[in-house]
Amino acid sequence: MSDQSFLDEVMSILADQIRENLPSMREVILDSARDALRKSSQDLARWNAMLAAGTISSQEYEWLVDSRISVIEMEALKAAGLALARIDEFRAAIVRSITGAALRAVGV
Image (tube, rainbow, N blue to C red):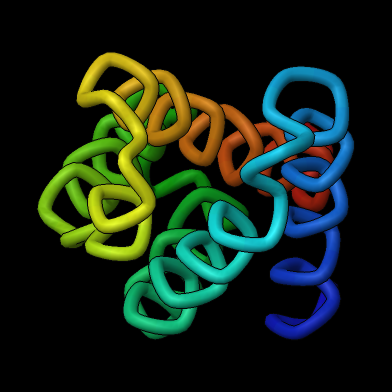
């Protein structure tokens, strides 16, 4: 799976989750997710390759993604007035989406 199709799949999964849980914040959240994925794209590509090669486990992959997404400032969400608990919930959704897409891509 190409890096772009991987990112597109993650964004599609997130869009579905947002449609169900936070429809009024959809655009702000998707913009923040795109920014987070853009800033993490090189790391994600490297980690996807490591996961596919069996160099890291799915748990290690998830930890790496969670750590990376946790340090990214989601200013748009804060500026939009989303509560910290909701930002954490959204961050967790990003991590689940990225991890799920990666595991499906490598057949794990």
